[in-house]
Length: 589
Image (tube, rainbow, N blue to C red):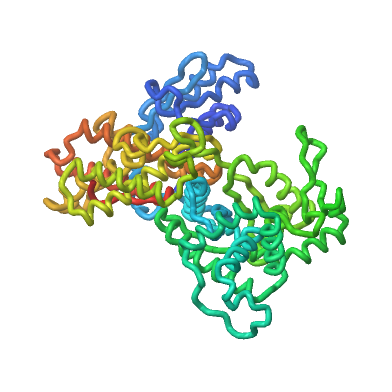
């Protein structure tokens, strides 16, 4: 279905051309003065230079050509040469009716050339609990993935676990000190290893920080951990079996926590999955003349002549031959290209890693790990801060576990819901969980990803203002009206969206009509905040219309049916949007 802005521009372009002017000047935009008009065209101002006349002479002619066009209620030429446009209520109603007849997509056309896009948006380390620092990557990445799917692309999310390196050696070393009798530590053991892990997730989460602290104070302990890491990475069976247990126990816990955020991944791959690709990749970089030794390390130069800042070489191997994050990320690109041939890979990571990913991307391109047309995109996000403007911490000053934050907001929402009215505990808990998730996700996603923001629990959980609960409350209000209507009567067979009867109704219809272009723009710019801005404006427009209109008390049956059709479309637009943001609305609040 044609976007409404494109349809309007087409008519204005034709009018320019009919009067002998280049159609490029007929581009229409949303009005920056909605008190004067709904859309505007400023092309006559630029055209005046080419045609050597006053701008209003051009805008007057174009306006005259459009005065009888059924698309417009009013076309005004305003000096010095602006075109102010208002849509005809009948045309707008017809456009929305066409949207409503496509209940699944509201007329939003899927992309003509679907792409395969991989998103790296997890990055948790195994054996460690998720903390608030993991929130933004998960929430933003999930929404970008859902928007891409809605637009028709094949989206593949990869959690990219941190499951390699010294942390694994530290866990194995500490476990050996605590339980030396375990068969995993017997080098001559030839049998099968147990299916059940020799530790719980709670024990695992306690082992790693203790081992890490010990290694900083005890050089011998750190040396043992480094040796364990080396043996693990070089195939010692007992240690690899322990790695399998660590992954199984950690991933089960991670999945539970991500599910609580309504976040999922198509792939649960880790750094360890990239290891088999490293030797051949490194050898090829050497053979092709890209990698060379610098101060003992193997590096690839990635500086470009146009750089205004220093871009250091991308280190491939340390002087002792050990791999680094760079090595793992490059090898991960190798297997992603081999197994999925993505057209694009998006990395949703802290914006402070931009230089690092510049190095990795340039190295991947220079050494031919990706095709020239493969896009590598860095989607850097800002910091989630507390009210003091500093990175979000617990009251004690530590990094808060993500599940504790979610539980805290669940409780806050349950308290607000039960304070307002009586509700069964089971329903109240379920509703509170849904509303709390909207508070968390909308609170994050309504900000442009690259910007830091204040995580304000009181503001995010409010039912008023630009918040998730306000959006859900609007949807629930619409559902309630629709249920009351359906309880009394059926929608007439000929019911459809009718031309607006009031300015507030037309304002609502104009907001709905922006759905298609907003979705395209949100995907093109990897910008979930555009979806949030849209549904906030749409919710405000609906609530203004609701307060001005006696929907259920309307006496004219067809007018009332038209209202109901409009409400159904509003509800559907809001529900599609919150789905791509990663949350849903309850039946009542």
